[in-house]
Amino acid sequence: VHVVESGGGLVQPGGSLRLSCAASGFTFSSFDMRWYRQAPGKERELVGVHTRAGSGTNYADSVKGRFTISRDNAKNTVYLQMNSLKPADTAVYYCNAYMMPEYSYWGQGTQVTVSS
Image 1 (cartoon, rainbow, N blue to C red):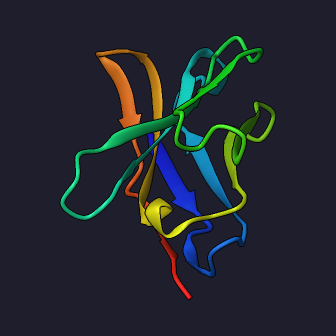
Image 2: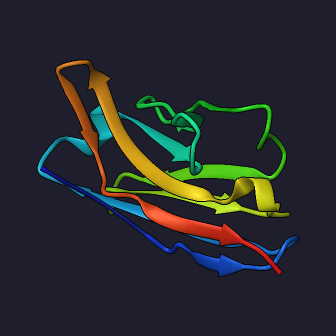
């Protein structure tokens, strides 16, 4: 099983980034795909989820209206489009593939820094 995030980097406030999460080794379409983030000194928080049914997304209030999760089951990839970025969005972003507690796979994370 592999879950690999990419696309992080340094961006100015108000800017945009798109993170990608490429997965392999499991039936991608059968998993909810979640994005989490963890800022220094803070607990990991759920940013949003794209359900395995492919029809539903949910977001944390802090990112609603600015972040969008999409998935391409043909490419086994999920995306996190982040717009109107704020310094408070600075964190390591993690991708999680989740079916049930016994089948939950994590990536290594990608750093996003929002700073002028």
